[in-house]
Length: 357
Ligand SMILES: [Zn+2]
Ligand SMILES: [Zn+2]
Image 1 (cartoon, rainbow, N blue to C red):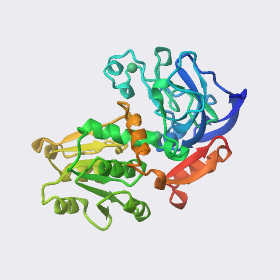
Image 2: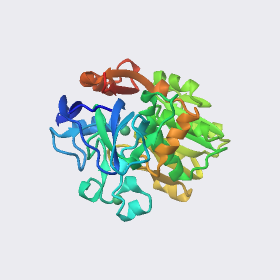
Image 3: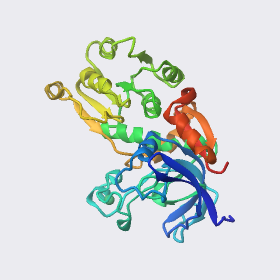
């Protein structure tokens, strides 16, 4: 493949200030591949680091954003025989250092050397160059081949689904026959509904406040869709579970009310998974948790190789992430893309940047 010297990349120049710049196409190290990016999905985490930097973020003027992307392999590092040029691939953001205790135990998204590139840690789009660019370097541990029938746009959402599957694995994994309540019909919540259904959950209930988003969920496998402005979530869950409460509450809305309802409406020994969370300290009912042996779990990122599982879900058609893709923009229109995403213009859910267009 003939590679250009220069490429376009979305660079963070200052708070709330992006520019599409011409930069040098990077060269893969021995265990890396160079990916020609076709689709890069915008994420709420992008919006927050554009507004104020996250720990370990490169300086303004140097940081290329974007961590949810898919494309084709364009060059191979000298030791790489796992991939071939032209392979269609998607990625996961985190590559652990491989030498800390957490990484050695497989918990690489919770790497103890987070942000320390000298020790081998990378988080593309967070601490190392991301994929909202025409080319990007990925360590091969973070790259997954995708099936020909899976579109690049859909494949760019594999990380989202990987986070959800990591969450399900963290809470115990085996959810067949159980009642799963998902709060928040955003990208993670809608992925969680579909994954729960695909894994054989007994009943999947989706709670939200926006009818437009709840409507999208109608064809995605929820058994019951509830607008919490019209119905009390606790009462609905009790009605649907013969007064016992749900087995799993998946909180992906980030609202205090939803977290409160998750704690209250989970059954004894039930599990609460935080995919979203309130950004300020929030009083929670620990007595309710402790007296009923309920558990709260958090997940950071798309750990335990769950993007690989997400790719398998996509390959086999067990989930359909396409209904969440509402907008695509060429890379030069990145400001419009983020405005559409942040303000949810025209019902925007997932907005995709197209670096080659
Ligand atoms: Zn993301
Ligand atoms: Zn580590």
